[in-house]
Image 1 (cartoon, rainbow, N blue to C red):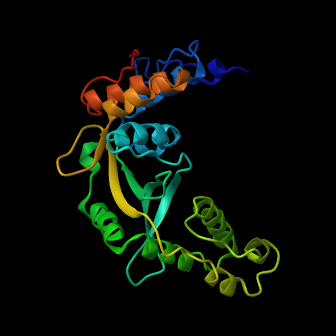
Image 2 (cartoon, helix red, strand yellow; image 1 turned 120 degrees about the vertical axis):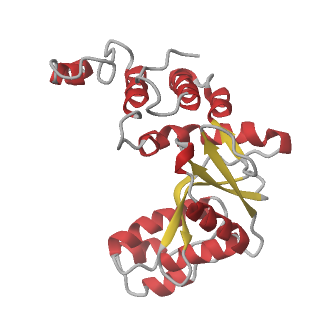
Length: 262
């Protein structure tokens, strides 16, 4: 069975024969995938951001380097998605879409992705700005506290987050932490408490990735993102074409059509 055999047209040949499902499945899988995103983003309940964030994440280090080049800043390519930002007086967290740190460890970045300018929310700006004001030390201390979850499955996921942060030289994990997480949970909370956070940490900035620019925000708009990725193979080229479509035509404003290239 090929991908053409399970295409929407093959499954429902008598329904919606127009552009919404009329994808050319003889194209490469990459082209067909982005054709689908280009079309389905026009539907009322479809959340493009949740489906496309993997592509933004894949190319985000390149886009950040392109954006930060005038400041002579280059980012570590090991970005972290869904980065927790502790809430006040709770053991819960809000999330930054991505976290990145410069190669020289002088700057850290919280990246907020929106595929619709209308989805910007003051409440999100508030917790991002709060994280900046509190500093990375407080943010990492919150993560260390949240990692002491009662549910072992949640602790195991936080262990992977802790390892990712440690790989960026932003904390040091006790050598027995993995064993406490997976094999012998006795003393696991004390072990998590022994995670060391360095005294010298980078300052935090917020960068938005948006369809268009917005005053008073550090912002990578989709057209700039497209320039950064369009030479990065088939996926980068096709993603850039969709980014230009998403930047130029607000979802729902005209019939869903696939991007045609650069």
